[in-house]
Each structure stands twice: as structure tokens, then as C-alpha cells.
Length: 272
Ligand code: 15L
Image (cartoon, rainbow, N blue to C red; front, side, top):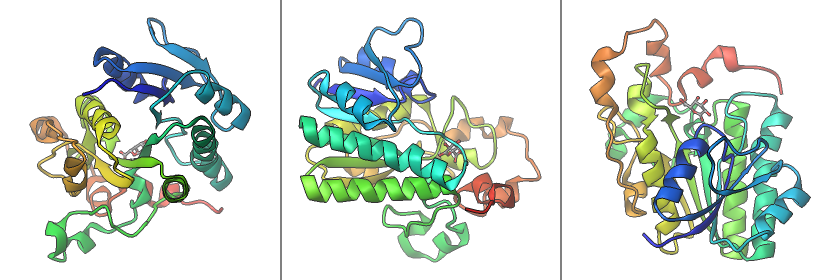
């Protein structure tokens, strides 16, 4: 694929530390951005900045010519409603405004399965769409975290329409070195497939606004991989090879009954 000049936010985070070196190795011109300094051994340029700070984001985005922003920054668990909106929506807005100001045409966004996490799996079994969750699923968050992701996707859609940006919302499943629970046999996104997904999103010609599921080609998957495949994301890993090593847990039945698994459970409920 052609080389891209790309800014990766959350570059020191769990996905960033995997994706940044892989994009560099693939020949892309990568700039990291994070609240934290660059991890030891980082060879890319790096901005220490808070994505909730529009001035800092404007300066970082404008510091070099860019083709795309890969927005991975954000708190990955449940928090307060204002916290979730800040972490996912305010950061995305600051980046989008900076992209418009500096003429950067594409964002690859780390959305989440939790944007549709309250979808009961039984509703996928109605004979339509092969029982798979499609990219047109009703926004159905399971947490304030999921509300933040839904709202960020809406903001991305607005900016795609208003300014003609190319935007890819990747609803990521469980990004882990290996699946460790029964649910993750369906939701796993391997490290290598995550890199394939981001590279495909950078290379897809003129996607406009697109939603895809960021999961591997799991035998037990309940996600429609076609929207991703149409954009060039061809996952190669399958969680099934870990199935025999995974111990059943009491929580499994509840976790596989709803798309978001543990996030949809009562322990994540709190007042707004
Ligand atoms: C996510 O979006 C979360 O950030 C992560 O903590 C996991 O819960 C993951 O989804 C998952 O659903 O396994």
C-alpha cells in the first residue's frame, strides 16, 4: 500500500503500542501523540498533548503535513457520563476541527462494540442477515462508555457530511494478544488483524463515512465482516485455535447473551 503520513493519538496505549511500530515497519510516516511520553525505543516523532485541549491538538495536527489521523486516545472503560463524553466526543471534536483547519482528509476512529453492546444476541437470530450484527445496527450502547462511542460516531458522521472528510468508525471487539474467555472467542481482534484493519482504513479509496467491525475472522463471531472486507480489511486470525485452552466460567452465559458482554451487566450501572 502507498505510504501515508499519519498522526496516531493514544500512541502509547494498548492498541497504539502495537499499531505504531507496525505502521512504521510497513513504510508509513508516523507521528505519535499521547498524554504520556514516547515509550523507550520509539523512533517516530511524538507530541505529548491532551486531546481534550483544542489548542494543543491544533498545534500537533498542524506541526507536519498529514494524510490521516488514527484516533485511538480515550479511556477504555466505564466512567462518569461527563467523563465519557469528554474522553470520546470532546477529543474527537478537537481533532476534527484541527483536521479541517489544516486540510487533513481522513480519520480512522477506534469506536467499540459497546456502541451496540446492549443488542441481545437473540435478536440477531431472527433469520435476517445470517444472525450477524450489521453495520446498520441501531445505536444501542451498553454503558456511558458506549454512549460516548455512539456520540463520537455521530460527530464523525456530521463532519464527513459537512466537510467531505473520509471517516472510518472501527467498532473494535476485544483487542488482546489472545482470547481468554468464552465471549472473547467471538469478539477477539488479534494484534496482526488490528494492524491489517488500520492499514486497510488508511488505504481505502474515498470511503466517505463508513462503519466496520474490528474483529478477527472468528469461527464464533457474530459480527458482519463484509463492510470491513469491502473496504479492504481481510482478517486472517481465528480465536478458535485457543478454544480448548479456555476454562468455562459461571459468567459466560450472561456474557454471551448480549453483544457487550460484561459491560451490559448490572455492575456497570450507575446514575448519570
Ligand atoms: C472495549 O471497547 C473496551 O475498551 C475494552 O476494555 C473491552 O471491554 C472490549 O471493548 C471488549 O468488549 O472486550
